[in-house]
Length: 169
Ligand code: K1U
Ligand code: ZN
Image 1 (cartoon, rainbow, N blue to C red):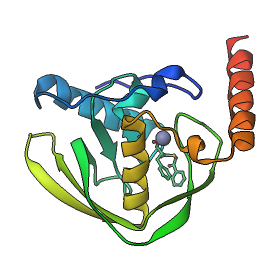
Image 2 (image 1 turned 135 degrees about the horizontal axis):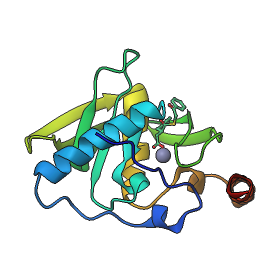
Image 3 (image 1 turned 60 degrees about the horizontal axis):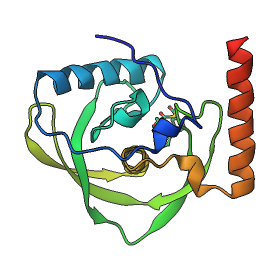
């Protein structure tokens, strides 16, 4: 297993639209293991392949307190969305230290392949629903700060670039 480097906003590679996974093979299973290890090491509840510079449609999620309920979703598709939406506080491993409110569907049903290539439908609500929508946005090249006002987004961009320059010193 391996800890993969996570791209940081405003890296332009975060805006790449991911392609479908063509086959669930050993390479994809290894990537799923590495992404889970990377997510747990970073204390995240989700991670999209885009964030580790792999532009294929795969996300991993674990919203359990015990950190023992990993989900691997390959080629995820929203097949149902609830009528209602709510504002939720979100964070992102690609935008460290920034938290803000984003409106998301209260519940979603997602069809995806698991790491064995088996098709399943996940019925997600609460934090799992929020996290899955956030991760599926990454696969479309969208980072949560793009839901915020241009003023907030520009402040975040400036802060991230400053932090990157200071880290490089
Ligand atoms: O995609 C990512 O960068 C992972 C991200 C997922 C996420 C968190 C919160 C709401 C939506 C999506 C994180 O794991 S950020 C770190 C974190 O563990 C966290 C932050 C806020 C609330 C709950 C957890
Ligand atoms: Zn994120």
